Length: 379
Image (cartoon, rainbow, N blue to C red; front, side):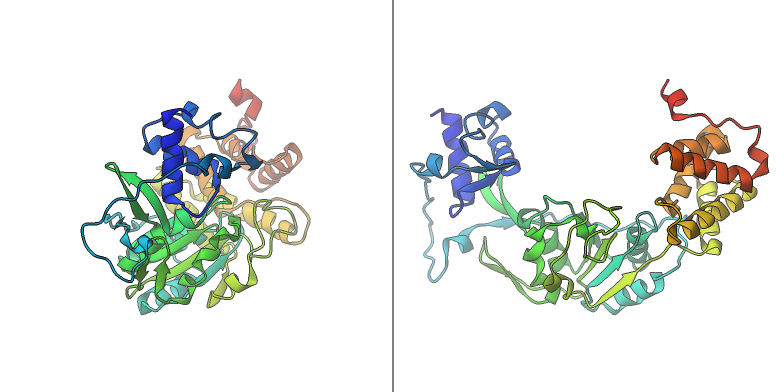
């Protein structure tokens, strides 16, 4: 066995002495932390023989004869597990959301503001269609109150190591690096779990934390008590029951016991016409492309499309975020139809053509404008 392979196996066993199953990402990060390259693990360790499922390897055979050196302790330690002896570090950098001049308070913003002002532990679940400002609303509430804010983007691979923390090799020493959840607890931050319905059951490690109580970090033996002001807000496109219409194929079904920890759930809709008009106008000012008439037409266009969507007349919808994208594109090309075309090109051709045709019926000033196709742009 090559010395590099042996060292990687030793490090894996040292970090996770009770485990034989390892994900590719863990093996790769351990390899790179030791200064080795992909060829030192891809083949010798990650191979067809060891693979038990996609992205997971059983290293029990290879680890069987691997001996990990246990460092001697200079001081007497009684009634403590070896886990409690592990030193831990945390990122001391403080993060704050910045106030955005384009933001328009609406919807549940004032409710979020009151929750955060109370500094009470009050887990809140915010759901709604993509692009209607859920995350932005929480961020701007934190900016308004100058609250420390930590955003964690959730995906299917997010696990305890990403959230609570894990072992890292720092300056030649293996230490426990505290994750964003522990940092938020200790600093009394607002913790935003963004797109939580993309997670798997790996996030069940947050069960106790969602009760607002002290938590034992099992890998170090340390007990962390949340500081005043700590709170958890989760955003999602669904209510945790999956996506029946198939719009959000990556959305998972969240365990009921997990959802039950959230005190309230907020279902956020798209803003009213008057609010959205202000949002679009603010973005036009931001990009130096003020056009009151275009702003009015865009908002009315999106409103008609949404009403049709809610009546099951179409399968797609124009979000507030997409309107802002159209405004940004318009500031570059100064062409209304081209901007709409480019920003609706992600839809299928029939839907995109229907959307553009609808706009021409609303705005008779665009008849002479080009409707540059995606093919022409790519060409």
